[in-house]
Image (cartoon, rainbow, N blue to C red):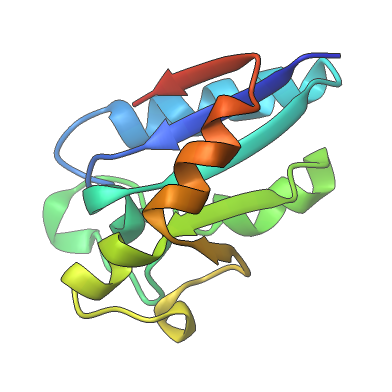
Length: 118
């Protein structure tokens, strides 16, 4: 089993990166890989509670993050500095995550077999 880390750096809407990352995570988990998901920079916005996408005409996929546990994707990490820079806290997020500082995040990334950034 390989350790796969998926790093989400982009805002959830306006590009296809967030949705594509979510799909790849689910595929990797289906093949019984050790999957972790990281949210850095504007990627932290993917996990914000109460997203309303009606005005954009784009389907809100944020609730899918709650279903990840059913696929054994339980390693969700958010970079502390990214939250702080955006005026957010862990309480603003739709799912439980482990908040790590940038040095801790770098150490965790170094332990992975595969790191894919979206």
